[in-house]
Length: 428
Image (tube, rainbow, N blue to C red):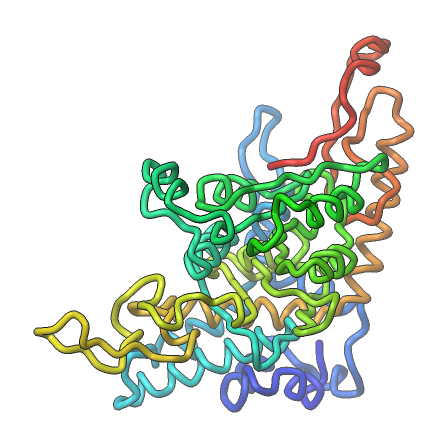
């Protein structure tokens, strides 16, 4: 458990006052923990103790068995302390954030703003970045980026007709990688952008040399360009060198955007805004975090990507306007602030707060602790799998990775099938 003072300090700007006090009490701070920061093992044990469903059993063909959850890449598991906090401290004072005239509206608004500030701090956001909460995951976050840069379509049937009306220099070029999350591939294909797919090199990684050649091609000269790459394959666990790709994209005048859906719960994300190896946009699915189910998608983007400043926002509704004339459609004044104008309707209030708490858990456990355990687990699993003659592990088996594995199992002695089966798989 964290010491009271250090844990409170680590949550400043996000879980202040009653929020931090209540969270610490839910963490079960003891006299022993007051002596110093909790050891890594203690933090992990605390995390396990808070998992909802850790002791459940279910009926199988072999009788009653304990449930082993092995789908963290798809979705994380909920935590008791987060749900307890929401029940005890948020829901009793819940109010709509469209008004601060009431106690509940004011209190809820402050919590939502603190949650957003904390998430931005965790992701290294600067003053030139905007945080948007979108739908239920990365899919909605990528769709929102497409809307605000002007390539999203009102309907797929209009794609060819609208594309034909665009001058070449107006049409975005989007470069994607070889092992994209489907959300980061299919939606771009169904947009007004021209999609250029970059393949793999001899090591099964993103072919950076091919990316350089594509970016330098005269075919794409004077056109707006954007790279949208997965930071980690959700099939093989292989990590992408996002900093190198960002440098290459920026060198050629392209925006650098990354899908952290698979690796976001486990790695440090730092926008490094304005730097040559920084990110211009990051997509996230906080529901994949431990404690994250029930959270919205996240788009953290550089404001220079936003193309709707002189137009209505991507979705119009309550909360986006400063003034509306009921008799004149043109006499509508939208907020200038991107985060306000892109948050139409009643926002996902509980979801935003829950997302900030999931980020807090990630920060509390610590990147060194997660990295060490993941490397140990990866090495053990790879050693067992790779040395089994009847198992073929997909993807590069020596690349920097998360402990995510996909593999094929062959009948004993089936050498012919093994020899003809491609050893790589990249997309899900």
